[in-house]
Length: 89
Image (cartoon, rainbow, N blue to C red; front, side):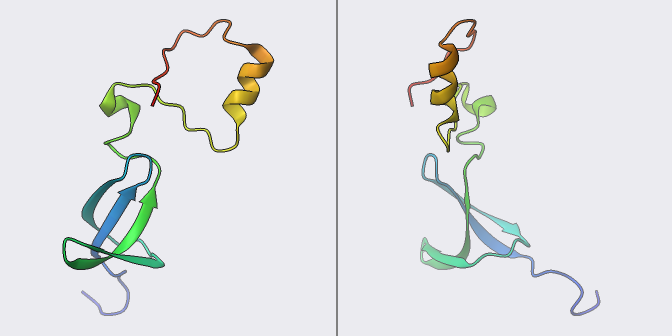
């Protein structure tokens, strides 16, 4: 391979902030933060959804609301016509 044309492929720690799940995998993603995990320092990437928190894998429906949109919608329309069950977590 030619030098200088490929991104740096290295081990990176991904942190699912919704349930504090961490895993190490290889990636070329650029990060600004580092963290020590199990005695080794890794570049840190914070994510909101992973296989540990995604409804498809957990079987629970969870609403991620960052700006109060769900509450605003429920105040306006109530729960009329809601067919989904929502997890209390």
